[in-house]
Image 1 (cartoon, rainbow, N blue to C red):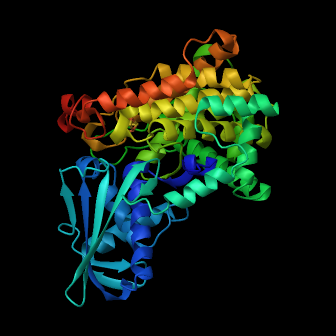
Image 2 (cartoon, helix red, strand yellow; image 1 turned 120 degrees about the vertical axis):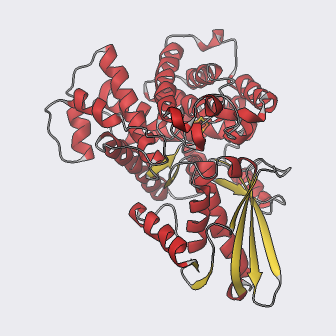
Image 3 (cartoon, rainbow, N blue to C red; image 1 turned 90 degrees about the horizontal axis):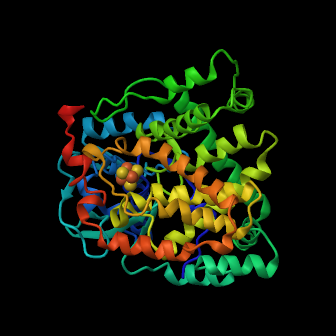
Length: 474
Ligand code: SF4
């Protein structure tokens, strides 16, 4: 069993997709490292990138081609200034040259050196192979799999042993929801406290706090940017950004200058059911409009579903608890991360494996559980909320139009956020002893459903809305 940290489930990155953008980006970086370790980096004269299966079928809409190149250029998705992305790609296209890891300029033909293969590799639907032509005439290659949420593996799983060792060193090794509930009971601790103890076996308290603060900062900035940026999203669907329109109506004449002041100002706005729905939707739409325009967001647990957790956390801060500060944010993120890891271990967070239930369903479940704990729910109620949120996403398909993470993805985040809030309220009002469906059972059910789902609904854009609605309809 692998050790999964909160920082594996919540990662700062660039949109629009964790499995199709962040993963291939990381794969590119890893391959460069491999070449260097093997002493081959200086021999490379040319590179070809082969994309397979879902990475090929929805790769252009998900910017897989661009992300792979940015990885090869040596950029880090956490730190790259997003405004540099277009110029870097344009340079490659114009000059047919690629500056490998920022060190060696080699030939690269954008139109022919990225190959889209419809074929699926047997190990995972998201396969990709980097091939290098060396100056001695030989070629070498390496195959990677982007398994969702920005995680990248190789078939031989070289890191598996290390991961198992780290898992064993956790004071509270958790595979299932029952393990988590058992530790909470045994230690008389909240879920966030148990998770915090595990995190401390990987990094210092200062590092954990700084990491969670950085994650929250990016979440807040992506909501703020999304709610204040007008225009049409890239990709050709002519999708108009809706968050700013909605935001203007909600905020009225209130004034603020920073994201932090924005929070204070929202706290002063009218609180009625309809306005709450609109605020939550607005936060979620904002993040996913930033994501769709290759902006910086937190993968939570994926990019397509990046808006759910910030929207629910922002709901808590601006509507539910005006006194809440960083301690509550930290608690929320720790619980959300742990619930996400239960799905990663017991099912999948990859839409190419399980459809949208693996993205929006999981993010809604993470948010529901986290909200329940910060509102004072018991560990059992947290798990009940997480279960309810997933139960009502089971079977949700992934069918993005034109392979872009826009329709249905952006709206779907607001739906996932609202469902999470409702699931938390239902769990808070219930006695978990009467819950009929344990969290572990819904995770198992999700995985069974994923395996039964037709591949045309698993991030291939070969079914559903993707074939019913065409670019000309937009
Ligand atoms: S439909 Fe859902 S799973 Fe598919 S790309 Fe959109 S958000 Fe991701």
